[in-house]
Amino acid sequence: MWEGSPNVVKESMAANTPVICTNVGDAEWLLKDVNGSFVTNFEVESIAEKILEAVSYSQIHGETNGRTKLRELFLDSDSVANRLMDIYESTWKEV
Image 1 (tube, rainbow, N blue to C red):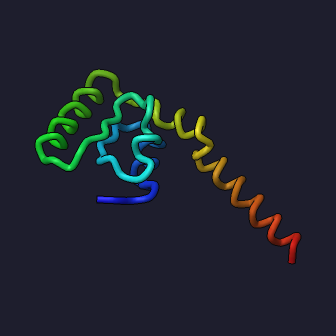
Image 2: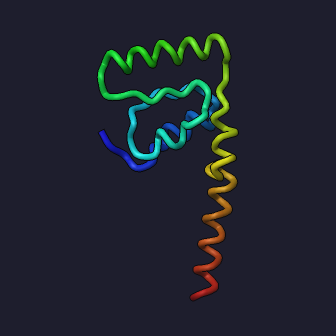
């Protein structure tokens, strides 16, 4: 029912696969303008409908633009790793 920033959403985006998720944490923000992504409520019928839409999207279009969106948000693995290295290096210099 709640979550901060779902890793499974970012993993799916990185794989350029359609995403179906409920509106938890930053999921709606992450998926804004990502083709083939579907944010839904918690109703079974709505989730089932979005699954069908995602399958249809995949059959017609194939991949999404999720990986590109992650790069734009600086949430790709290289950007995150570089930020972590910066934090570690700045902490090391303070010791």
